Structures are given as structure tokens and as C-alpha cells.
Length: 138
Image 1 (cartoon, rainbow, N blue to C red):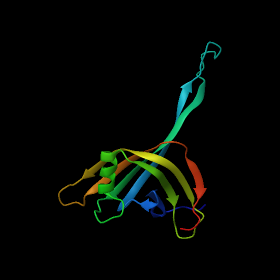
Image 2: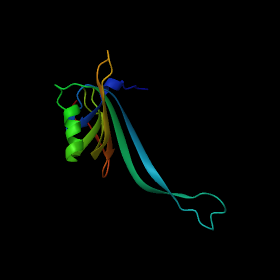
Image 3: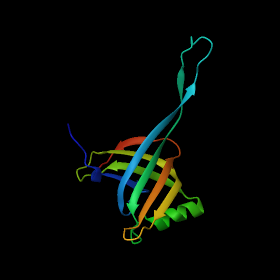
Image 4: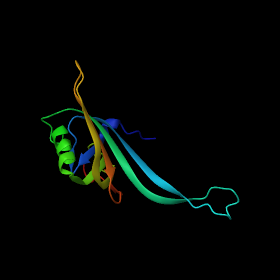
């Protein structure tokens, strides 16, 4: 069984990696609708409803980075949407999986603790369909 090291999984915003990223979580969810009625004999019956994804990125604050806290704060101020957020397997050989979707920033936090490096956390939510593809070259 092949294992994938965490450093080979990346989050990209419109093709640009988030500066200083240290980790991320890619969560998917589907709303389950209650379809139970009088003929269900007391059993719950469920149907699929809305579906979507949330990506939470943790990063070191890197003001010199290409996509960092300044751009994320600007997204909040200007209500800017992300055309393509990608969660991709990038390990130098190509052929890895990539999931793509339009997204919106739902929250962020910038933390500065004494005697520690400043950190950034940003949460993005999908807006529209999620597609799966393959990284042509990485």
C-alpha cells in the first residue's frame, strides 16, 4: 500500500500555494434530509440534500509570501471569491489527485504569541460543484 506524505498535499488559491502553509484539513459534508413518513414503520429514512466542502489552512505568517495574511484580509474586506481552490497531491511526478472548486473565505485568524512565530488560520467553503482531476505535472 502506497502512503502519501503530508508535505505532498497542498492547497492552492487560483494556482498559488498559500504562503507558509504547515497543515490543512479538507472536510466534505452532505446534508441528510428526513424522508420518513407514515409508511416507514418507525424507521428513519434519509435522502441526500446539499453537499459541499470546507478547507481549513494553518500557516506561518509570511508577509513576503505570494498568498498570505494580507491577501486573506483583503478577501474579507472586499468580499472577494476564489475562482479555483485546489487540494492537490504534488510530489514531482504528476498523476496525483486534485479536487477543484470555487470557494469563499468564511473566517480567518492571525495569531501573535510572545516568543513564537505568528500564525494564520483561514477557513474556505466551497461554492458550487467540486470536481476531481489529475495533476498533469507536479
